[in-house]
Image 1 (cartoon, one colour):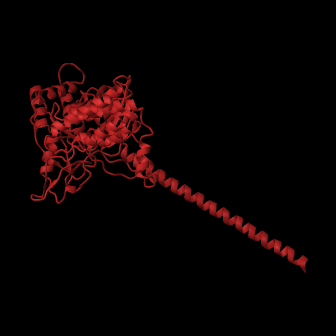
Image 2: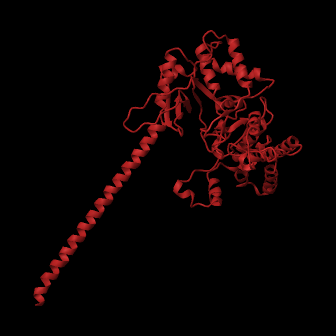
Length: 454
């Protein structure tokens, strides 16, 4: 009887074992299929996003078409369209209508920017719809003299105008419904705007033949409609912004800043919520230059603040001091890499004066340009609560204190906190601003004046 039971048990175990193997196979086949499906979907989404965002070939084709038709011209047109020695490299675009690429032009490496008109969304596999262009390159008109063009540029710089927009995602983030965009940088009545106009005409003369042709003037006029280009020209003489290398129409190339952001790095999004803020601030300092070189970079930021505070063409505010907007060169010279965060103070005042409010939280321009709310009139006040210098010191505090020599750390910390306590609407702010700035620069300069970093 026992002998009869053994084969039966063995058959049952064998059947159970085969069934288990079949189940495991089906499970792994299902998991493999699911992995392939999810992977294919991720690739599809990534490719769709890339083709939607990265449309530099459309920019190039549109620009070169107008160049060949004689509508526009500029210092980069021949290299871009005829010789093809200026080329677009890696796509850095984050907005469809604002194309950003790395690029090369002979011995120069830089960043190429080009504006697309309204781009209509299309599905993968469909032909892209034609670019809906903004009305650029229609000014100045044929027959306009150089003197008339100079007058156009001068009036463009002086006119006071506020543009309302609910689509600006670069500068105004706090209140989308009350979103103000600086579509044109207005400098108001400045005594030396004439020299700025001459500088602009010099840039417009792309082929350096001593005169500005109509196609060159159209390209220059299109560039002037972009706030970041004009502000870049204003600040590049002091070495605060990347130098403009060339342009063709509204496509332009600036020199590449090799190191950026100023400090820190971006964590993968799954880790952001798990890493405490204090630990992340500590990690931000791990990949910074030596302390004397950090001092030289910091001096560059303080000099930028000094130059735009009652500068040659008026006063300006930096409305986002995030480290991501700054970089530095091989010689550890600071560069402001995103001039869209800079706004003329007169423009800021006009904007805030027109803004209604219920609380102080409603009176925010950009990321951190704040005023207070006048509750009696339900309107924002004009005076900024915190000046550029105070925000710059907040950005530099951890950057400079990390690794500072022990013999001067206490004094450096004291001066940084005094700087951060500055208020824009305080009495005698100009004198206090200058005193704190000079003391801080003198303290830092003493630490590097005897080194090669000076």
